[in-house]
Image (tube, rainbow over all chains, first blue to last red; front, top):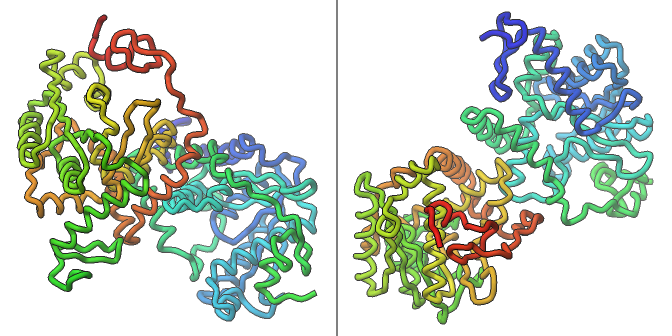
Amino acid sequence: MKCRICREKAIIGLPQHNLALCADHFDNWMLKRAAKAIDEFKMFTKDSKILVAVSGGKDSLALWDILTRLGYNAHGLYINLGIEENDYSNESEELSRTFANRIGKKLYVVNVKEIHGMSIPDKAYSKKRKTCSVCGVTKRYYMNKTAREGNFDVIVTGHNLDDQAAALLGNLLYWKFDYLAKGAPYSPPLWKGEFAKAKPLILCTEKENTVYCLLQGIDYIQKECPYSEGATFLRWKHILNEIEENSPGAKQAFYLGYVKYIDIFKARNIDMPDSRCEICDTPSWNEVCSFCALWDLNK
Amino acid sequence: MKCRICREKAIIGLPQHNLALCADHFDNWMLKRAAKAIDEFKMFTKDSKILVAVSGGKDSLALWDILTRLGYNAHGLYINLGIEENDYSNESEELSRTFANRIGKKLYVVNVKEIHGMSIPDKAYSKKRKTCSVCGVTKRYYMNKTAREGNFDVIVTGHNLDDQAAALLGNLLYWKFDYLAKGAPYSPPLWKGEFAKAKPLILCTEKENTVYCLLQGIDYIQKECPYSEGATFLRWKHILNEIEENSPGAKQAFYLGYVKYIDIFKARNIDMPDSRCEICDTPSWNEVCSFCALWDLNK
């Protein structure tokens, strides 16, 4: 297998693009893929102040690296969830800090246990709720808070094509309209002055992000979150990999087709709440938002 | 495994309904499933004149049998496509005729080769078109013609849940809106006086229809059509079977969820053509309809 561009030995085959590339040309190609997504979905510009949600995993570190190399002004946010199993949270914080130093960029760090006196798993247990749901509410809150307080223009996350396509398949199989309405690679600010949300790596696969990190020598956490929802989501990924193997490009066609027609899933308009949380003053459908209710916060 | 109703030995497990049934109660249950679909989607009434599109396979013969036993006025239509491989067409015609005699109902028979001097495969070859596409256009034409000339109120087909869910998955993966707009279990007449189209077995699986035929001693053609599109469609079926095995009921939830929301796929309205084919006078977007063009018909 030879590099399509220089005919040197290829290190990766990309059958969905009818392509094989050497290390240098693959590296270059990854930058172009991210740039293409940013451009095509009008995600942000060189003037934007960007907050990268960093988990310490391959996708978010690859994203932060790529944005920095492309000349974007991107800071990081790491949220320590207090997961002690496998030293998961501390190790991923350490890797995130090391990476931030390496590229010389600021990393905001939020430590849930320090702030609330309880880790995400402990909170979930005490509230008899699913860990992933408690984690989602909490991460969203601190991402939004950091972006708002730091006057960021956009929060970016490392979601890759495999993630997006798998979520899409699961949501279609059960017709989860609330999620189907929200799977776009770019969501504009909900109101003037608010930040946007974007996923610049939606044209890149899991495998491509992994290879990118390996080639760039980026040290990322290889453990899975011990609370990972796992089974079901992995099933959708597995199914799509099977389909992709028989029809290279199917995954991208599936996700991008959806993005093209996403408006059909927005029939029931997603309104902005016109009230605000009594406690934290963020827009909320209820008097107290789900985050403040979860963490039993008071005025 | 015991029958949920009489505690006798069950002959079939239906995990998606958390049910197991003996032969008698399964038979009864099948009639109820068809009745439920007919009722829920307001397909037709005891006064309706029904044309069953019969292929000689398990689904269409089970359908015709069930409708007859439920007291509906259902005639059959068999279209002989002239497929000689494996004696496919003649054997399926024979089985259809035998079944019609058994239930004492009229079977209309159309023989493509007798009318047009050429079989479906030969026509496809001579026109350099796919056999399945030539077959589809031709069958649709003769179903419509028979229904129109015989003043039928509705054409019914034996599509089962597996067929419908597999087609849906394939159409969603590639966002084929033309097909996604048309997958409902019931399509009302396109204009007043025209017939409707309905699929009364959409709540029944392939396996259930097979077991129904075995129990009723219905002799159906077990060969697959030698031109069957096969591979891709079977892949979607296989994937859905995997999903169903892990989450019994997923297939039905997937298809019925789609039916509930099908209007979102009709955004680009499917208009009725306002012109008619110069040759056969059926509604057509072009001067000559696809059927008359295919078979080189003249005025």
